[in-house]
Length: 125
Image (cartoon, rainbow, N blue to C red):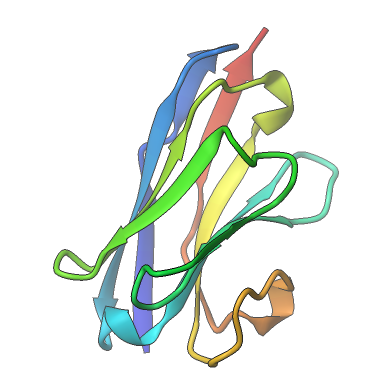
């Protein structure tokens, strides 16, 4: 089992930036493809970005492509989400997730084995 803990959320103005972190503990972090999802009030959880276990491939939702960057540091057991040019529509609880399968990319919520508790991101207009 792997435990995930997000940090780095907060309140930012439109056009600003935030960097989210997701620290893993437990089983070997490098065994998992990792992803970020988000859930806005009254909406379903949606895929944001994913990164392969070795960091060699990434995949983004169209809504964040060109603005968000997902990276990972397997030596630190951490995955990051750099968010630039934030807009109010990015307001949501952001959660990281781990997938132990060999499929990539995986955008379906139910395919991920492990989840963090989430961190709130609020973008003011």
